Length: 325
Image (cartoon, rainbow, N blue to C red; front, side, top):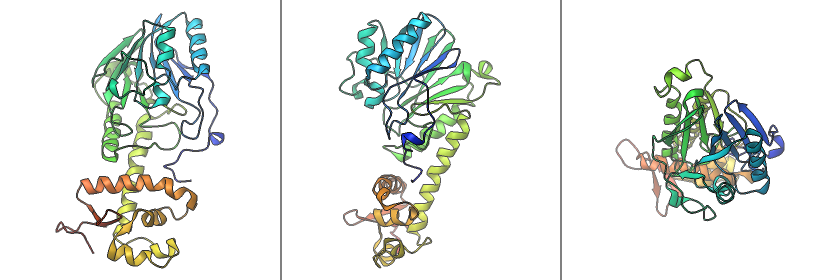
């Protein structure tokens, strides 16, 4: 399976429905496991006092709301603020239930107009750099587009921890709408661990990452670096094939035509996929094509490749600015 694709749920480590990760952080699963949500959407209840912060709301499954009720009852607490990482339904679907259960909850989301249709009205905007507080918790919101344009992450200053949303997952890699923005956001996220924000409080603390899906990441900067390196490797693979420096595409495609077209008439997306993912079952090639298209679009914006004719074929741009033959 290409590393860009999520693992089947059965192959993932099991996670408890609710789990206290630190004295001030309890993870509550969304009750929605699937191929794309992994063990389910992670939601996080933060703070040690009677008023807590909630990050994300799952997709509105009754099991999630029941679990949240139990945790809050046991903690003797309520949700004062909910922070939404991005617009996807598996993160916003529980907003309406949350507000109905705790009417005083303030719900914040960057670009609130981009919320899913099922989200409750009256969402408040989150500004880049905005800070949120609860007892034992100081969070800084950082705009990190790429997975979606409205995506936000939250840095927990006291714990040197980052809530990564769907930009970085606990298992496998993530998908994205804009590769260039996504890589820039990964770089920004990695830098948060070494920033001056909360520097004294986080000194000596393990740089943890809490993802939107999957298990806790014990070394956040290292995992983010893996993501950056993975994306760079994928880009280099695309360039290598376009240069003609990789295996014969005709042999991979099995139709005797790929190599000639690759060098003279440009490469189709599927010819690139068949070369790059030659050791991957063909049934997964269509899924892999989306990532290759994103790489080509990024390289096109950078002036390094060009789409030919109707955009079906792609070719390198030479140093002269013309498409390379």
